[in-house]
Length: 117
Length: 111
Image (cartoon, rainbow over all chains, first blue to last red):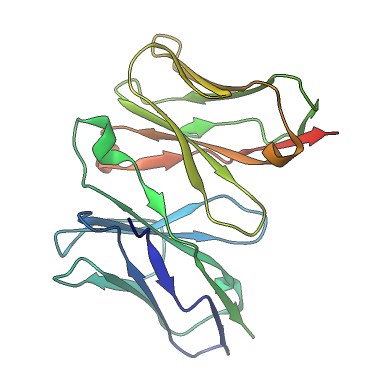
């Protein structure tokens, strides 16, 4: 079974540009999560999509946005890039959310390393 | 107070020893608990899930959960240098139906 895939692996942009990152979840998973992990820091929750809808959002400015497509793949857009946006961006997927624990297991993709110059 | 707390380490153990990693959480209604392993520069990998009080064993890994004390731990038996990584504790609660991650504990296993 294929895992979560992300593209591109690396992305280099200059300040002020826009970046688009893509994620395909594990087959059968409907929830997609985006996290930012800056160098040496912990996982910071960005966005959660489920069944095409944004369900929750972390403490990030509106220039971080995204969407989920009918096939459950997802896209993260970062507008007006700033130097501090340089980080590893991780996508995770889960079966959904439920009182049943296994539904909440999140599986991560390999990440996209974004460098803003 | 952080919702999920871990000692950042590094925790250094000799090869072959038991490594004990601890995590406390603040949301009393948390229902599901997970341990992830993250190698430097890589993405987190789910290694253990635990949903009820007590111990759960999987190979060299044992997860322990005590909901009354709001405490979850991960024991790694016969630690190997390849176990050297950062271990992230994650807790699923009712707050926004989200997984909340701790800051991670860096484990170093010395040959």
